[in-house]
Length: 179
Image 1 (tube, helix red, strand yellow):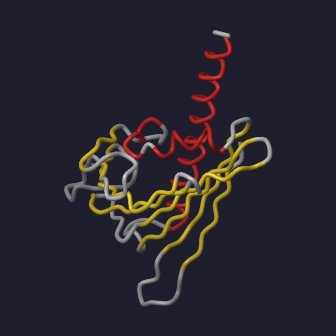
Image 2: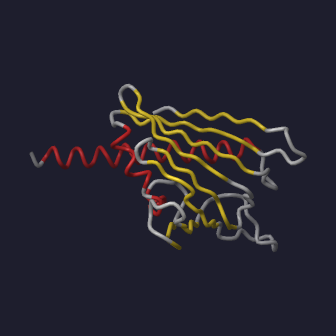
Image 3: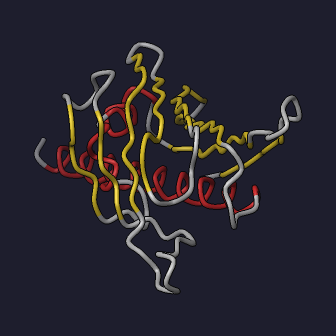
């Protein structure tokens, strides 16, 4: 498994947005095998490390406009009294294309300091497996550096790819044992 992370800062406005991209490779399994695990919008807690809860708030999973509540991210959030608060966000699915294996979502509320956050996740075919790309754009986050966000997303995506591989391998072994 390989992970790559790149970023840039836009300089077109007084408050430039942070932009970044992370990649992780899933070996042995094709894009059409990995995609169903990622398109389960309400199932993020099965894949993302440090996330303890992902619950439906509105709509049907995988339908544009649906909203999920996610909590348990390990990020530097403070409740204003010197204590760490439970980190949470509400995320809205903006678009999804199962044929192209791509979806976009936005953080619409939360306490982690992300404003105007939009992400796009793609699953691309690759020789011997597939690759997951995670693009993001957000206003600069108070108390963070862009490198922190790159690391958070990059490491998170690497673990997600690992968990996808493990889940598909378990299914393959279980089904192979029954034949």
